[in-house]
Image (cartoon, rainbow, N blue to C red; front, side, top):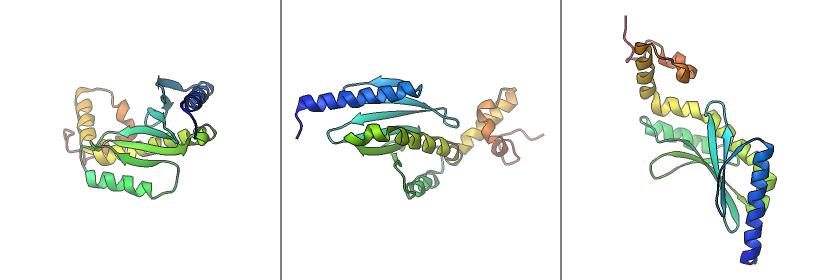
Length: 178
């Protein structure tokens, strides 16, 4: 059993290792506390994923917000998440009390720094590859409305360009038919 001084020193070493990884990978460190640090990972579909790394007595927990609770199709949305959790891997989806979606991973303290790159890579890849699909399942109506609103006012649709084929068709009931 370690004493509090050894545990504090070990925690500081882990935090320093995470900061070093962030520096080497040109990744922003968003917050640092006594036993917690957050790094901001740049993505493509999900532009950034903030990963909170919390150091506990025996393990380190990594958690990243992915997307808020769906506006519609909750059952299909949650089924999709559960099916993704069936695939083996270091990260899994979870939801909080509001239904907001997170990715999580857990690793023993002494293994974090050796596995940090692969864990953060898995979190980023999963968040990024899942984001657009989750948007389409849980927010399609809102996206259709926003597309139609932007078109009707001549506004840019750049932020929705990845979904143009879904939003610009005849099945968008919010577009004015000419």
